[in-house]
Amino acid sequence: MSSFALPTRRLLAATLTGGALALTVVACGSSSSMPAMPGMDSTSAVPSMSATGTATPMPLMSGMGAMSTGDGLAATSNGYTLTSTTTTLPAGKASGYRFTITGPDGKPVTGFTVDQTKKLHFYAIRSDLTGFQHVHPTMASDGTWTAPLAALTAGTWRLFATFTPDTGAGKGTNYVLSRTVTVPGMPMDTALPAASTSTTVDGYTVTLTGDLMAGMAHPLTVTVTRGGKPVTDLQPYLDTYAHLTAFHAEDSAFAHLHPTTAVTSDHGGPTLAFHAELAKPGSWRLFLQFQTAGQLHTTAITVHVS
Image (cartoon, rainbow, N blue to C red; front, side, top):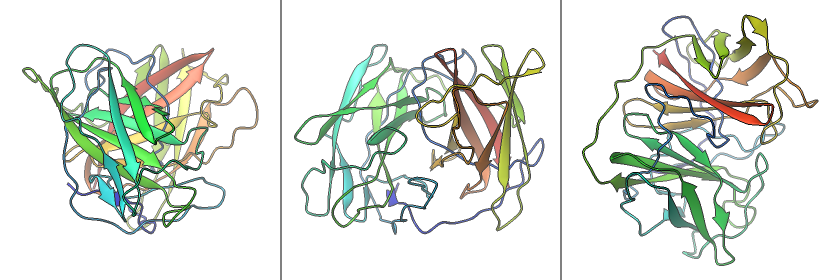
């Protein structure tokens, strides 16, 4: 498993089962209202792993924040390392995962650029792509972060940290690093749901439409409805109306991009635009997060990229 800094943008094409979908994968949000559905388990922990390999970082893109491509499957990239002594986390109860981000000089990094209102975003995903959690850790003055994780189920988990240093050699570069942890017990894996173009959560229907072509980036449109009627009361959440995060079915590779729909008022929807960049063929599990009436909704949908 190799960690990576975000390399120079790679535009990839994808033909999606159940309809061509242009995907913009975004990171963000904690899953406070996770529905009970296959592939969506609110518990999250992640197995520990060492880094192997590096990647070339990608600079910030004007107008779109710190965008990233690559798979994030390593703990070290371009001299930056996600460091932790934790290799196991308890099952069935909330826990805190402590870690630091060290720079090329081996010292903890304490200066980060704010991205979508946070200095660092943290994700946990189980190896079968259930148990998704997106949380925002707190950092102590010495650079030690603590990520608050909800109860975890037995199995192997991968933990991702996304951040942009505001000083040093990596200034302005968005990094995605990860480690794994093990949660003891008898793992009960869930089969990946079939690919689809729509899903529901808390009474809302989310539909994906778009078009992807090989070697090119295309827009993805996400439409949110309820009871067959357009939803227009999406509230800003972490400086956007919705967030998409994707994980590859075979290796849990991470994809995270910002939406292209700007926040212009307290109410958004029903359609939201994204920009697609999925680097690998195969099945991906997308996690969409949006907020209405102060409640965060999180749903998941599988797409197939050829």
